[in-house]
Length: 180
Image 1 (cartoon, helix red, strand yellow):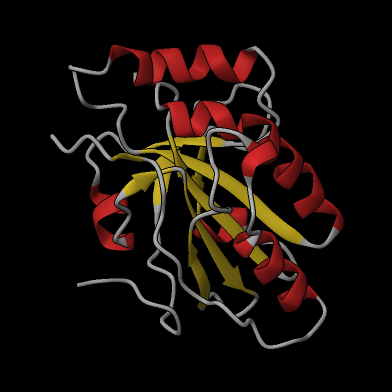
Image 2: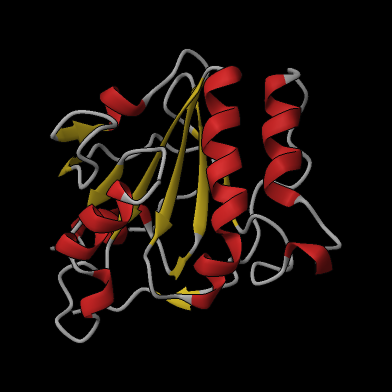
């Protein structure tokens, strides 16, 4: 099954690697803000994620201001071939300055249910828990200076302003999720 725009967000319940932000374990209800939530499938090793770190941090901070919950999910943590994405390394990275909950999907069940394919991959859920955008942040995840589009930011702004989201789905650009 593929999770598409217009469908209800699949529920999840995962451990949180962040020692200071969010509960020890979190589910979709915990993440939801008054206006919905942003869910980002992410990791630590991918150069596309590394190039987007500042944008993801800013997005997490801004989401609070506009009533959106925010969470990242690491679905590479259970793959022994990617030690840099392990649950332990994710906990360390959270302690080094990440300002949002970073959940661990070692079984990759949540990534499969959500149809996540790449890191980073962005999902915007409205207050009714319905998917209203999925895909990339923009067309240049490794270098924001080269971006010529702003699909995710546009979708968030259009939603918050009560407008119709013009581009509800884009192809993600990033590293593939490292399926076990």
